Structures are given as C-alpha cells and as structure tokens.
Length: 224
Length: 165
Image 1: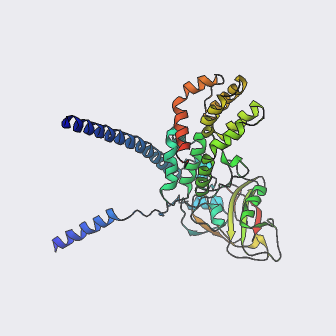
Image 2: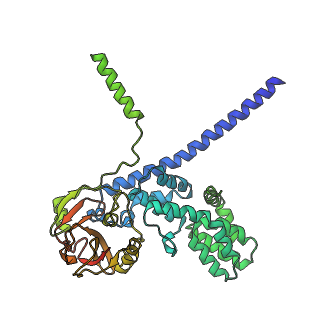
Image 3: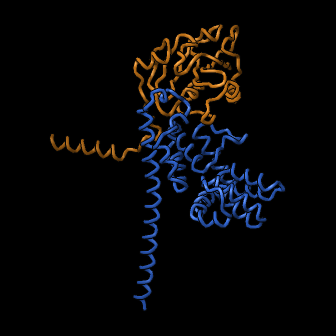
C-alpha cells in the first residue's frame, strides 16, 4: 500500500517536472527567436544597403522594407512577452530597444502615439506607457462597450485600441444585439490583422481561439 | 613557473566567465567614409564615434544614452518639433534670429514640413546662423561644424528652425 502511494507521488512529481521543463523550453525558444531576429536586424542596420539610412535618426527608416523586421512581426502574439523582456533585460534604451517597441505596436496593431495623452518618445517611456495601457484595457473596453454610442463607433474605438482589446470586446459583445456583434467581429478581425472581410463573431471566436487566449493571457499577466 | 602561468590564465579565464555582464555596454555604430561625410556636409570635423544608443535629437537634448523619436514613421514638421521641445522649455526663435538670445540652442534641418536632423550649439554668438554646432549623424558619428548651416541638400538640407532655452 505504502509502495503504491509512493509510486503515485513520484509519478505526479515526474509529470509536473516534465511539464515545467517543456513550458520553460517553449518560453525560452520564443525569447531565443526574438533575440536572434533583433540581432539580425541590428546587423543589417550596421551594414545598410542604402548608406543614407544609417544617417537617419528616424527609427522607422531602419525597418522599412526590412525582411528581418517583417520576420520579427510575423512571430506574432507569442513573441510579445519576449519582446517586452528585451526592454526590461538591461538599461539599454537605444535603437534596438526602440525597434522592439515598434514591433510590439505592429504585432498588436496598436499605435500608442495616436492617443493625445501619449508621451512615448524612447523605449524607456514606451515600456511604462504600454504597461499602463494594458493594465487599464479591461476598463477601457468596458467603458466603450457599455456606452450609448452607435455600434459602428464602438467598433472603431475597439479597432483603435488594437488586439489587446479584442478578448474583452468579445466578452462584452456576448450580451449585445446582432448588429453590434457584426461590428465587433469586423473590428476584431482588423485588430488581429485578419484580412477576411466577412464572418460572424462566432466564426471569429472559432478561427482565432488560440490567439485570443494568448493575447488575453498577455494582458492578464500584468494585472494584480 | 609554467604552473604559475597556467594557474594565472585559469584565474583570468574564470574571472572573465564569472564577471557580471556590463548591462550598460554601448553598441558602436556605423562609421562613415570621408566621401560620405563630404556628401552630407560642406564642412565638418570629426568629434567622436557613434553608438546605437543615441541619435541626433537625443544628442541635441544632451542625452547620450537614449534613441529619442517622439513621432511616427513620417518626419515631423517644425511646428511638431516646437511642441515637443516645449516639454524641455525650449522656445522657438527661427533660423535667422539675432540679438541677445539665450545660450542653450537647438537647430533643425530639412524643410518646415519635413525635419530631417537636429544639432546643438558649442558656441553662442549673437546670431543663430553664426553659432558653431555639434551633431550626431543618425546612427553614425558625432561631428563639429563651424557654423549652423553646414549641410548639403542631399541628406539633411538647410537650417530651417532654431530654439533657445
């Protein structure tokens, strides 16, 4: 009897240990991919095909038509924690970190600088502003979705907030009429960079279930 | 003796491996050729090498450890630059200002609808145009210029704005 119990405990411990190792490896593989791609971007920047680019202070000039940057953005929502970790990894606040900030915005289809209260002008200020932005996301979406404004206006606001708003908009849309749900589905597709023009809210939920879970976890991770 | 040397090498190797990584290490940036420099400015003198942790706007503001760009992909207008620099208490005086001016100065280049570059002063004369300036060229090095309007039209263009504090 004792042996059976001991074996069960050992098996449980082994399962947890294997799961932990798999989880850590999966996480670090995203981090590795992000770091490798950022390194490639900086190596390309150091040997620009157009020498005029190296003389620019506009960070967006360095990523324009840059296949390595496109590859970074193509990593998608899964890369967001690793990109953010790059900002927190050390005190560097240069071009590499700025590029990571632009990638976070491009992946989430969110342009913080469009908001009048935005003051981000370097990676260090982006990091603080982005963190605050995500912390307040459920409340922002709730305020929009519960307002009396037309459904199309609400959807436009959700679209402006980008992908981090989508899980909360989907929750709120459950309670709303068919027209509102169609508008939210359209906004959600745009915020996810999905070019399909049609499809119901249920279609969207089904097609993007994993991505919705990933982006929700990403937002929720920073909530107290 | 040989044994001592081996121990010393091992000790140094261990120290290098165990030494904490310098998190504030800077990344040296692109070095321009003389031909490129002549392409950018009518007159220039090399000041110091550049790093990817700093661009022209940050350098003009006196910040050597940040890449500062408060705008999006489109380069700003002079008016947008004015709005940003007011955060740092700089007031716009224009590229032709003269007379008694405050001594801390920032200059911008390009056109009023598309600013391409910034510099700061190393001397404060009675006229903006006659100030000697220093600027970091994008991701590249830092250069000195004898006057405030030193750039060719190819990359940065003429002086189009100036602010004082």
